[in-house]
Image (cartoon, rainbow over all chains, first blue to last red; front, side, top):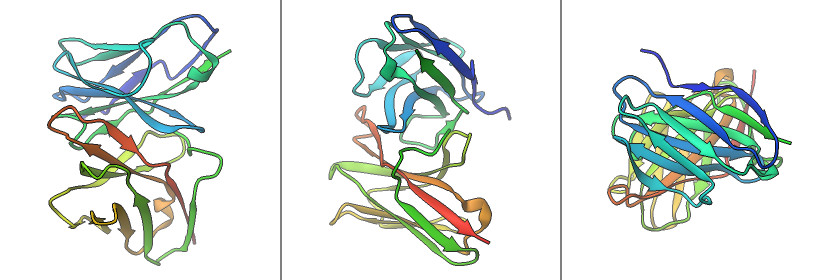
Amino acid sequence: KAGVTQTPRYLIKTRGQQVTLSCSPISGHRSVSWYQQTPGQGLQFLFEYFSETQRNKGNFPGRFSGRQFSNSRSEMNVSTLELGDSALYLCASSLEGIAYEQYFGPGTRLTVT
Amino acid sequence: GENVGLHLPTLSVQEGDNSIINCAYSNSASDYFIWYKQESGKGPQFIIDIRSNMDKRQGQRVTVLLNKTVKHLSLQIAATQPGDSAVYFCAEIGGYNQGGKLIFGQGTELSVKP
């Protein structure tokens, strides 16, 4: 069974731009969640989507948004990029949700200059 | 994935020894706890989980202990191997049936000496 895939793996953007990251979950998984990982803040939960609906949300500003499609694939969008948005963005999928075993992708490394 | 933080707590053990990694969680209402392992260049990998109605759970070479009285979680790795070298994170979630948030600890770097 294929694992969680994320595209692109690396991305460089300029302040003020917006970016869209993509995540394809493991086949059959309905839950996709997103995380930000930085040296200063560690791993932080962004949000979770389940069957195309946002079910849980962390404490991030509205510039961070996401969506999930009917095939469970998910995208995360960050608008008006700031230098502090430079991070590794991880997505994870699960059969039932974040309170169950999750499988993480390799992440997208975003650098904002 | 990468090791998180410039000053992660570090645990160094000899191959074959047992390792104990500790975690203090923050929310007394948390009812689900997970341990993850993150190797350099990879995303976190689920190791073991435990619900708040349990105080111990065992997996293959790993045991998780939960002490709700002092809000403490530990991961025990038996017969530690070089492949166990990684950063280990604990995570907690409160109200997982009511849209709870997953909160991660800062991580502990485990280094296994051959």
